[in-house]
Length: 352
Image 1 (cartoon, rainbow, N blue to C red):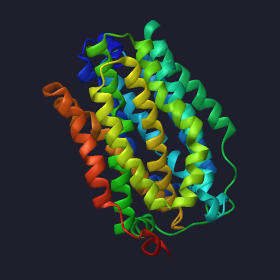
Image 2 (cartoon, one colour; image 1 turned 120 degrees about the horizontal axis):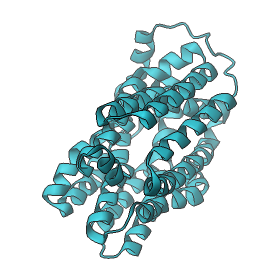
Image 3 (cartoon, helix red, strand yellow; image 1 turned 30 degrees about the vertical axis):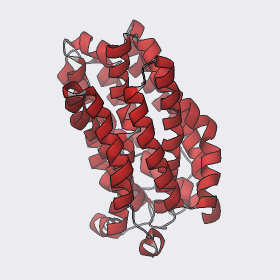
Image 4 (cartoon, one colour; image 1 turned 90 degrees about the horizontal axis):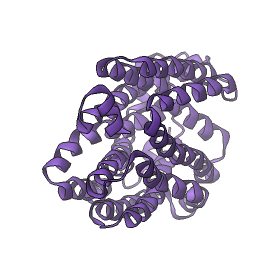
């Protein structure tokens, strides 16, 4: 919906893409410590408050009369959601044995993919009428999630170590390196959805609804394959899964930036959904298998979404200067930087 958003506020689609960055930067920054705080306050209580805050922030976006206030609402959405994502993952990791962690994360990933599937389509359809409908819708959903909550954490609120001590425990070299891989994977693959949308508009002249439908392909593929990917991670190993996802993702990014037909771009983007699941399930399994709890999960997720926040800033100017380079550079980072950064044997280094 970036072109429609820009038109509504009188800014260019490139400027409208700042709405992605204004969400992800505070989301990533606050998430550096939100997991540690949530472990002290109790996971259920923190998640409920986070969803309630997301409702209020979404209403700010709906009612914003200027682009500046809209960006402020997006930033508040990011802060609120920072107190949900890492704690949900930590709850999954605490609920299953290690030899079935990949399968559990596959289930988790399938539900995330369901959100990825519906969001571009619903957002694109809403933008055909009024983009504010999409933000009103997520406010309603966040309110329902606040009421539902998550299962109680038996140790919730009982962890009394200081925030500094919790961060020191979580911010270890291998945790940071895994987080850097997550940042590269998210920023250079799924995080490029905005650029795919720009290419679909500029090269194929299709509207918001069809653009949303094409972007939905990744979510559909991720939804259908997440369970299989989770089982594969348990079988072939977490590190190997990350590498396979990164290399496959590099081919996907080149394909969506060069293929000459909308159908081919949609098919390639669907394969990207599978590659994303392989990479992210592997990353999440690596850090959750460390038994370091929400603090380490929080750090990795903060770096992951920090990569998403920087993606529009880093790649939009490159795309406008040379559309092909806009896709080739992130593909090269996936294929080259991920294997270089990923720890060779992260298990022992992450164990207590």
